[in-house]
Image 1 (cartoon, helix red, strand yellow):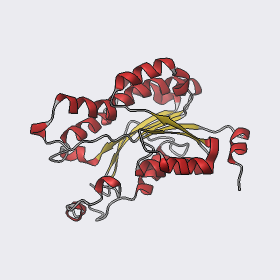
Image 2 (cartoon, one colour; image 1 turned 90 degrees about the vertical axis):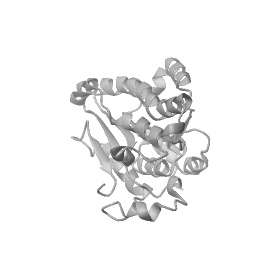
Image 3 (cartoon, one colour; image 1 turned 120 degrees about the vertical axis):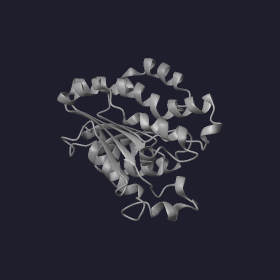
Image 4 (tube, rainbow, N blue to C red; image 1 turned 180 degrees about the vertical axis):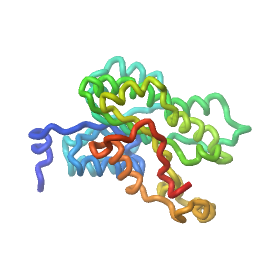
Amino acid sequence: MIDVDWIFKMNKRRRILILGASSDIGIDTVKIYLNKGWSVTAHYFSNKNKLDKLKKIYGSQLSFFQFNFLKVINLEKYIKKNKSFFNKFDAYISLTGYFNFIKFENFKVKDFYQHINSNYLSNLLIIREVLKGMKKRKWGRILLSSSIGTKFGGGDKTFVYSLSKFMNEFFPRYFQSFYKDNILINTILIGVTDTKMHKGNKKLKKRINMIPIKRIAKPSEVASYNYFLCSEENSLITGQKLNISGGE
């Protein structure tokens, strides 16, 4: 058996923070980075069973970060006390996807803020911190996630979710000042994927017919794009919204 702890200590690895790492796409993304030799800090909210299995294989190459982003004010306080934690990362991927099915006519202010806090505002706070370390090292990669549903205004019950994810498609002009320092920032619009969210969806076949490629994505496929965009392999793509959706 390979002593991954020893290898980790003997080699300087790039470090990445992955939010939503316990999701189906998140797990596959974590695997790719670990296999490529990166040091991964995987965020989760409550369930990390699959992450624990990876921990047994990769040892100290994988660490955990537990947080509930619904109460974003607590994140602001955490950052003030743990700036060095965020400054060490060379790359940052956000795959957080809090959603609650709510019809437009029924949504409440609380629903709105929970989605915005978890899916967008938490990203802004963390990006502000990771950028500081990236700028000093003159290298960094940031990848946010949105949903292909934002192109169509969201579904009947995903209005608030789609709106919160759409915010990740907005790049403040300020971000452009970091491109010259080899800090690249992008957003992917994830299409229909074979994840828990779509299990048991009676309308899935009808939805697939709307996809030009006529199939849904595998989590591992999306993860491979995540890796490319946040690795040394990506040297030019920045400030872009990329559809990973089979042609939609």
